[in-house]
Length: 366
Image (cartoon, rainbow, N blue to C red; front, top):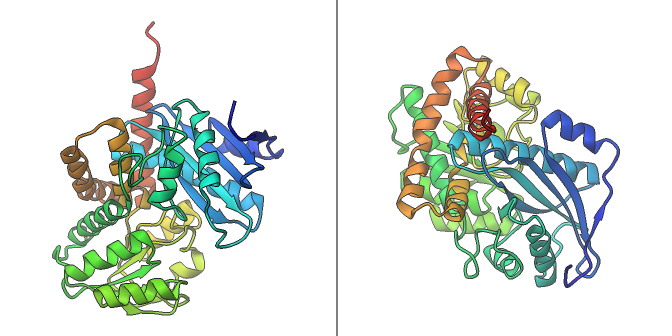
């Protein structure tokens, strides 16, 4: 079936229970011995369209950590797509590295592309943490169901679109708190200056904001400091820095109960996925502290709109308008949260309503 030998691994005993609890349709484990690829693919929901998800190329200490990431990210993608009202479902591909910094190869990307192709269009992949447009182009040699490359498939790097969406969400949060929608003079702390964080820092600096940054990569820090005049902060201090807006743009789960108590910001709005460690508890705790939290499934939807929109054939102008509309969606969620447990609860309620509507539309007649 494939040019290289690919095989599926039987699932751990507890995986099915996790799937049922989160509402997943399909979870599969894959390997390719010739390239060393090991991956988990989670398809959460395809009621509104094919499962769309990033390929996250990352080192995980345990298989359980990788599975948890795949399940949580794919579920969040379903909700993000529904809130954004774009006709796709949620999925995630986690490519497990044998060691941190393991070099990407064309053979590995090709194997990943063939696995994606085996889903026959029910799975569409885009770029996530650890991937580059070149890697996406390599995958695109084996499948038409990938987005975000430079040459072999459309969409391009989603990071600038994600960052633009975050700016729009920040604007709504400022307006909601009664402040001028003007970044000049504001202090924004960005955790993580990879593709999204670096683009966000540049945009904010251009708008006149004072930008604090932190990252584990000294090279990334130097580049952003030199390019936009950002100020470097130690990684262990960035989340609790005094600022107007805190923008987590690295990995998820960085805001937990212990951090909530130490925060010195009035708004949290970032480009990372799954910013909160426990969404139900931490979002309520933030509301109790009068910290406006823009759910990441709203704030960082710009990249999804760009890639999924291109896959669905939406004109560039419509994609640009939908990214601008993140500001209106954010304001709607913040206002809905006034009568809900938290902003996260309000965003999820909106997503669930749209999923229910999709089920009704797709239900067989009679």
